[in-house]
Image (cartoon, rainbow, N blue to C red; front, side, top):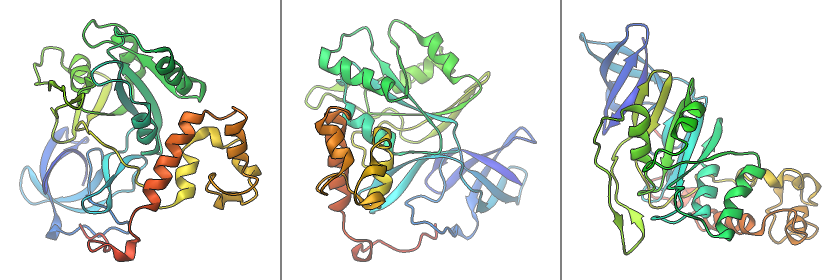
Length: 314
């Protein structure tokens, strides 16, 4: 039988069987799920799995089906990639104009964590003004081809427009703690629900976590994977060329680099991307974001030195 993972807590999974219209409580058969990739977690909300029922509402997972898309971050503690959500049509990256302030570097990192699906960037708390510099950086995403929308969960401004962008699609909501992600999800999926939302830490201008695990929610033709708020987000890549390909503005220039696909777009002579930055054809602040991510990749220990590195069997 095939089920969709809709909730995951420790080693217990809630699987929904569409053909039957009901849920099963699932565990991994033998507590081991053999995978080819090195991952922190074998299953994420949105994954499709094969399972064998052993009671009316329980079953054992035997295989994970191939993912069509994912949102993946780097888990620092275990030095592995961690999939937060899978098999969605788009990822809505939630940011805010105020408390916490607009952080484009976080947006840049979040975009690089998206694989195989569209990106929608949502600015919450739009009733607060951005500085001119912040607005220009926000508008840059639109010029780069990303869909953007400014909303206010407090006033309801543009919430209906946001719903229109979500209808008929499965969307993973990701964002920093305190940006109002859970409040937006409540407005869309269950306006009457009084889910706890965290206050903002004055010291760090960051929110407290209000969702501690990913959860699949739906209403009418809107399907949402609500993910826990995060304070920091690190890119999952091991290969520098994959990171560079996540910066869409590089695409027009990187083929002209003297070092080809092996160019880091940093120190190489005759690098077309560096030249484009110097000529103002690539935004300098986005380029600084790229350099920061590149440095973080290069600072990681080689895989053979990681004490926890092994072929994932979970």
